[in-house]
Each structure stands twice: as C-alpha cells, then as structure tokens.
Image 1 (cartoon, protein in one colour):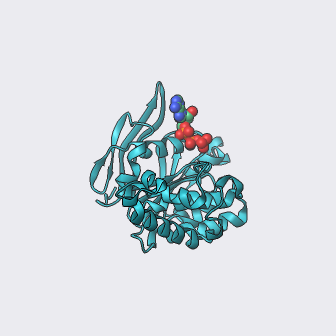
Image 2: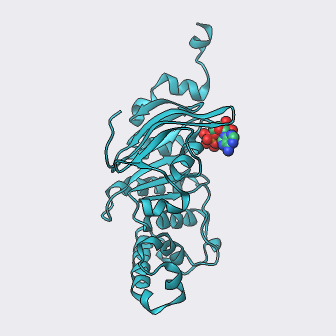
Image 3: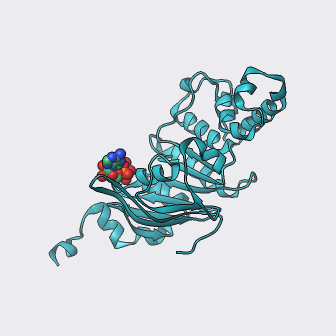
Length: 264
Ligand SMILES: Nc1ncnc2c1ncn2[C@@H]1O[C@H](COP(=O)(O)OP(=O)(O)OP(=O)(O)O)[C@@H](O)[C@H]1O
C-alpha cells in the first residue's frame, strides 16, 4: 500500500466488540483529491469504519494517520483536525436558520466564536459577516440560497441533505466523510448529488479528499475514484470502480457463492 503523507491512512485497523470482530486488519488510504467509496453487505463493518475515523469507536489494534501524522480523532475536535462529516439522516440544528446552520459548521475558523457572533458582540462583527458571506456562497453554489432564512425542518429532505453537506464544507475540511449521502434520496436527487460530489476534490477553496460509506451501488460506481469492499470486517477488494465491479469475490460477498463455486 502506497502511503501519501497528505491523505488519510488506516493501518491494520481492527475493531472488536467483545467476541465479535467488526473490522479486521483494514489497510486503506484515501489520497488527497480523490473520492473513495466503502461498500459491503449489511453488517460488513462500514459504519464501524466510519465511526473509527470520526473518533466514535477506538480501534482495538492498528492506527490512523492523517497528513503524515498519527490521528487520534475525537468527535468534537474533527473540524479542528481538518475533517468534516455528514451523518446518516441529516442532523441539522433546530432553532437555527439554514444559513446559521452552515455558519455553525465554520465556527472553529472564527476568532471570536459563533456564540458571540450570534449574540452580536462587537468584536465578532467582522467574523460574523465573513461566516455569513461564506455560508451564502456555499448555499448559492448548491442552488439553495433561496432557503437561507428558512427553518431546516420546513424544507424537503433533499434540500436538508444539501444544507448538511454545505455545513460540513463550511469548515473547509481537507477530508470530508459522508455517511450514506444518497440514503433516502430519489433517482433524480441522487444524480444531482453525484454531480456535486465529483466536483468536491477540485473545489477552489482548497479541494477535498472524500470518503463515503454507501449502499447505493450505482452512485458509488459513478462518483468514486476508488472503491473498497468490506465483507465480514475484512477488505476483500480495493480498486477503480470497473475493476471492483468485475471482481468475483465482490459478487460472491453480495450474492453468495456462485453455482460453480457451490458445486465445485
Ligand atoms: N457497538 C457495537 N457493539 C457490538 N457490536 C457492534 C457494534 N457496532 C457494530 N457491531 C457489529 O459489528 C458488525 C459490523 O457492523 P456495522 O454496523 O459496522 O456494519 P455495516 O456494514 O455498517 O452494516 P449496515 O450496512 O447494515 O449498516 C455487525 O456484526 C454489528 O452487529
């Protein structure tokens, strides 16, 4: 495995929950500027992998490196480490408007903090204006600026998902983690999301590596530079989408042994 000093590397990550091995010796790199998708049948370990990188789950063995350094993620410190994420579902703050939700994503970039910005304290005026301008620019890029003042709960689900993505990007992460970004979306919204995700690595605010965990196979195959396949906690294939799609071990993981395999 080639390790890129600027990317994310999982080096021999193993996670055990009591007697159950949810991840076993997982070695994977998410290089800068690439979109890497993690797929696998139910219970394969995808969520556990995501949770390890977010700091919700500690590996039993192995380590993570990010930007050439050992990474010990903590969920509340992710943004400061340069990692953004969206979670399954949406998880926006009720009581804040859409634009305020996106501003909240960039709190750690403001010197005086978002709380004082919201309270309108004098020293925070410039921060507040900058955060608002940047948030509005993201909403405009995503085609949802018209909803800036709306309560998220009042908006259709696909719009809320875009707001959640804008909030994650507001922190200007070097690595963006997306947990089932296509979940709950219809075909048209998935196609629109795919167009958006493929632009993320080349964005002019620095570009992002993207790692996404997803069930929706067509979406993964259309947006990812590399696809990693988990089965029973082990990586059984990593490579470009077309290679992974044709890999017999992947077909077997999803569909069970082939007829030839069973009768052999
Ligand atoms: N906190 C936990 N305690 C005990 N076992 C767990 C825990 N979290 C996950 N597991 C187990 O670890 C294995 C991997 O689960 P995980 O949720 O990571 O898989 P997944 O690929 O995300 O599945 P799905 O596609 O169904 O969401 C499963 O056998 C699951 O039951």
